[in-house]
Length: 113
Image 1 (cartoon, rainbow, N blue to C red):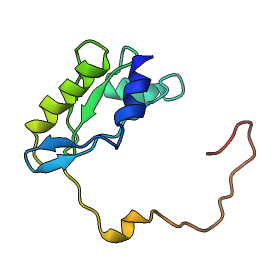
Image 2 (cartoon, rainbow, N blue to C red):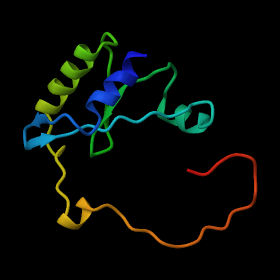
Image 3 (spheres, rainbow, N blue to C red):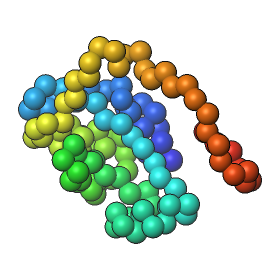
């Protein structure tokens, strides 16, 4: 589908102008068959549902044509009028996390990723 190609092209790679500087957007998907309670709680009734979630917890639904140009235009318009969308991290976060430990869980069918 077109939205997967949009996500692959723009997720965390394309800088968008905001009122505070620039910001990137991270595309995520959720399987509403496996996470039905969460989808119901969020009011997701059609698939795929495209939303721009903001740092304050609010979101804007995308209602346009499902094309790369329309999604990018939506993001540009929404982010251009937004405050608080830029994030700055301490330089240590450029390396990523180093986690070490053990996780004990009951054996069940499936995989852990």
